[in-house]
Length: 487
Image (cartoon, rainbow, N blue to C red; front, side, top):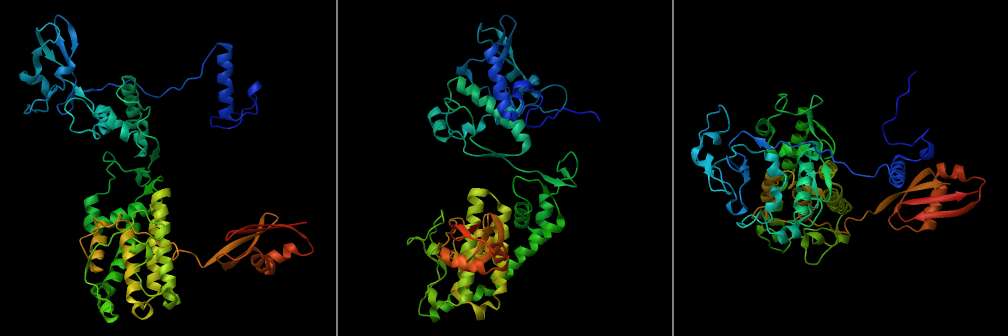
């Protein structure tokens, strides 16, 4: 059977002095040897092909060049830039660029000799604009230069670039090239336009990327009319992690639609009581329909200035029932996890799953009116609404108003979780014997090592591997792991 060269990264074999080296190390050594021997050098080569930037159309950026019979091709001086497109060209759709048939644009004078000349009638490809337009965002009203370098220096490089795989090999590569040209010209001081790249997945249908040319595009308007725009958003975020491809499924989008309907029915069922404030009057505290309360947009530890971080429930914790404490704990744990998914992992699908779990927990507490105080219900439903808001803004606005708030969600920050409420009361500790998992024990948070060890020794799976052996050492990681070393 014929052998083929292994083209992936691995370990070099039958390679003389480089045998046994991993690919990266082999490359470094080969490059060093080539330079030392004077027959080569290490160099990074970009796959930047020749770039034909001209297009025969009206709506591009004019190429600042004129043609003179005496002086040939002459660049337009900086003082005469920018070259502007004519306001009313004749767009016939036939022949060459419409600029070639506009005498006022076409005919000009040579910047060198002052004689008759004609302008270049091709315009630049839009890739030229997309390679640097974002720099202009930093200084959009500058009429003396493309931008103020000091303003660009404040904003660049971009912290995070997000784009599809075609961006990584086309637009992003050209924008990196453009950045280095501007750096070499002294217009900027940074080497790269963006510090990090995140490549998002593609939306597929029938295993192929959606494309107008393939005719397999799902119409956003059709989906919005059938299920609502918010359902489309939620489904797209829930169906796959952002870096993975998403296989479009109408059956799955119906699942997202059913979930949002469950949330709506839940709020609708308790709207009259939690929004009216009747329970506050009955308890001696009067509260009218409120404007949006100030929220800590960073989340995290409780703050005396942030009523939501402290929880709006004013009933002392010791007076709450176990069911009420459990649901509040679940709600604040969900805020903590969703915040982490949003801020650090970008796992929006996991965040939505957490919100679905919380919704199921609320339904499991039915009948809520009998099991939960109104203020507990109000807080939990508010947290569900606020967590859904970035993904389902239209529905969240309506739910927020149903819950008794005026002013809309546009001024409401992300909810902060109450760190005390979000604590687990029980944790599951993995028990190992000589590094191998032999069981698990459930204990209260903060249980001491000796108590965990006693419970572990009573576990049948653990006890079987301790029988007749002496404990040499115990490795304990609080609330996570117990490893018993025996001999």
